[in-house]
Image (cartoon, rainbow over all chains, first blue to last red; front, side, top):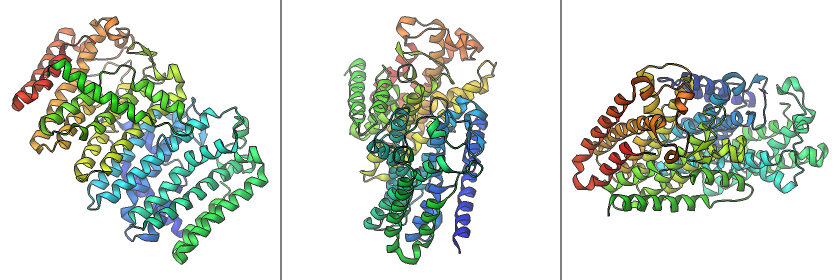
Length: 295
Length: 295
């Protein structure tokens, strides 16, 4: 299967499973579920679940094992975007060309939709783990995701980001923000693929290192696109970081150094991937694709 | 040990453990941790963790087993209050006589403090479960808490509550709101005490029934106090439900019927508790104490 076909195959599996989880309306939570679904199906790239699936496929051979965790990762990512977009945070009206959750449902429901997605992600993972014989592996994976999403991971990055607005920050804080806000969950995606796939500790560590490189590269590429991207392809206005006086890698170090750094990080990831030979073909292409993407 | 001493003993254990969990500042998450701590130590009654501990004590004899879950319950309750108080929800400036989280830290940090507490509660529970031999019991308990807090539990109740503002609602929806918004987490507290204490399925079910009765009684008592309570003792203004045109049991059915219903629910709980004889003395006193409390 070529890269595009396999990518679409993964995304199809993820979307079908996500949809089945969202068919869970009961009692008086219809608006809540609708708003959760709205943001979950607002055109996300499904990067984190795709990474989990493709990492799993290096080691395991029953993709159904990893799907619940892949979906949980997408739910956590989506909740973080809904809360991020709120007026008291980034105050964004559009994301991927569509109105943000609070512009459609109001702030109260948007906050609850975010809370709901975060909580539901744990419900799904625990429900799945509960049915497994090898409970240990599954609890380890859920813990990995919780830590990556938490107050020493994604949320910490979001707080540091919020506190850095309208400030010139140094490279150290910038990398702290990127590593926590973006790379932590991307790293967890690759790691849990390996854990559920019963990879060795060395392979789990290798997936972690790949995640850190890809996660940083992904965020810096995002910030480059915010300066020189095509608004039609991106589905949002460019220049928002500059408008918000937000320090990013390109605003601090320039475009040329940023492009070079994305290339370096991508090469680090690719070099780590090369040890898996042909099996890692898809992840290698994905890594290159992320570095050269236009949206 | 008399009731007051045992209650203070439980609260002391819970506060010490909560404080140890909040000594977790790392990197640039200082403001986040501070705001989480602010709301966690803003004078809560610790009802849910006390219920978990006292339920556990009917069946088990190593209270350390239940403490992490008790603390997680308090964190989840606190996150729900922080988000509830936000301008787009109940828009409250004071709670228990102290400024609400967003009035001190701003809305952005308050939303993240809530997210942080919810996520951290799972981190704590999973970290604890991961060290246990009988993983199954622990995963079951975490799942119980997740379901109670989630989109078919507490969050569903909050959405229905939000959607019922400025509307006359019927008894069915009112009970749906109470059962989900309040009773679900109270019920989970009692249930996980039994699960971790290795109680029989019959005892776990009994704890559930006690929780449903106590949870409903607790909410209706709250709504009665909002009409006829003493503002100094409550630490907040009374009459807020009437001001917000919120339907509650007493606004729909009158004070007399509400007081009688609280008594009936409390008696149901007490009658279920009586099967545990002397061992349930503390829970019986707590149940009566909740029904007659003035704050």
